[in-house]
Length: 146
Ligand code: ADP
Ligand code: MG
Image (tube, rainbow, N blue to C red; front, top):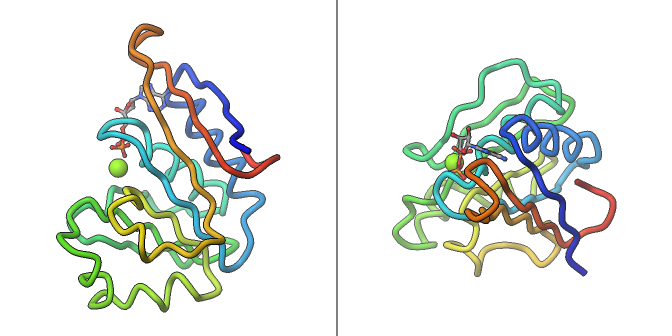
């Protein structure tokens, strides 16, 4: 089953991320997919705040991963947009993060689909331009999270 919510501002997407984090458990992996500018990083920022992370969260596009250890659970924020091949994930040592005690957020997970565990939560953010520039539909394959 897919559950959806609609947001009409950056802040509403941020708040959805924050709510999601309140329910996060050690070892959770949240995949964040959707086009460039959809709002994946906005969601991630809200998620970080929900974990109690004070450090500013920035897009890890060039570093692939950023770690935020200070919150209720360690957060590993991935953006795999620039991964040329899933084997580059091995070099980063992704398994330590995916199968560790922290929480992983993975922007552009579709690019490394074969590495994503079955148990991961899938979140997709889509625009509907006819409903305006700031309208987004956020879909998730789990009940009671968003
Ligand atoms: P992504 O990480 O998916 O590439 P970002 O989160 O970096 O995208 O950027 C999303 C952009 O869209 C931001 O500039 C944000 O202000 C804007 N925006 C407008 N409406 C929304 C909304 N409803 N939810 C999230 N972002 C929105
Ligand atoms: Mg991003």
